[in-house]
Image (cartoon, rainbow over all chains, first blue to last red; front, side, top):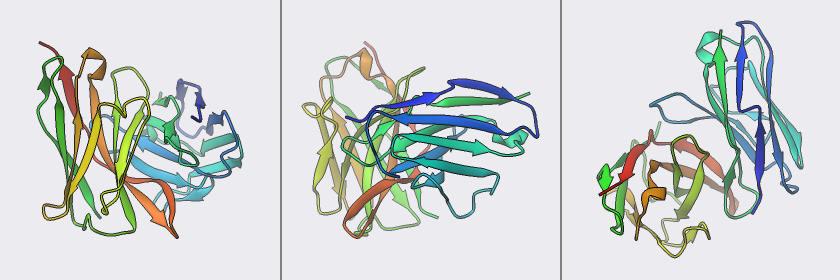
Length: 107
Length: 123
């Protein structure tokens, strides 16, 4: 089973900041990693597919990078609406596994 | 845009079977381009993938839950379901259903999620 280690677990940002969230895989997963945003009581939203591709309709302030074992979600010029829980998912190997999640607070 | 909605009892007694249904709207569950999954998240903990089903009926389960899980699909109702037997307090969680992508015979990640439903295991 592939373990995804996500960090930090919590971050607080000021509007306009650039923030980065890390997701490290315990083994090589190529680019088989997605990123999601979830707000309380709402369905998770698919924001980055295959590590680097922005899902259509998602703000270009979001970007993804990485390959193999190290991945990063970056939010540029963060806005108050970006306050949410973010998590990564690997679909390279069975079973699918998730990172532990990051709660992003906007000051 | 397709939507998924979970439904089922919010309270289940220990040792009983948890049963949930996911209704797919604004899209067909019969499309061969997708698979259908269940995921859960205990309060304060991370997400755990439970398993998936194809419209052919083929299933894959997380080995950690395999002995207790059954996922089934009812294409006539555009629904798929989860049964988890012999539940304990450790199965208390928010349960989500989600759709996954299949392209060229390769399984990709989940693209559409339901909001989730809270299930508490307690006597």
